[in-house]
Image (cartoon, rainbow, N blue to C red; front, side):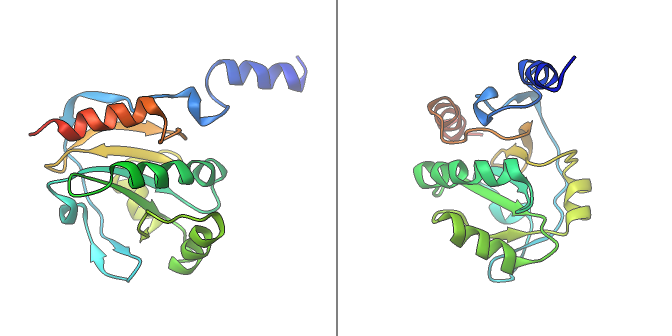
Length: 173
């Protein structure tokens, strides 16, 4: 088997390829309890997920050095622009060890306008959220419970995901 055949086989299995290979956020049969390690916002203020209680949150654990993370970030920005508000928030949680400065520079380089900056200790965040790879995105209900999870990139501004998120936002707990 040559390299091209191997890569084609991996792509066919859905283990590689563009973000649109996974169009929807997989949801759990029942909500799951979550841990919430501390993190900081762009101003250095200490936060936890409790600060977002009452909103549906799409928590995206990412890093500037993660290529799939970098590629999906504009779609998260577009999702926040479209649905963000009192009922919904995209929370891009960077685990960059270089700190807030590198995240700010990345946002400026690619033109992120609607996402806030958040930063967590990489080891603590990966362990507490049970993230096995990057990006890991967790859908969190208004009461702080995990509703669904996706490991790997997605096209977060696709019509299918926007529709799914709107349905979840409109469900009152």
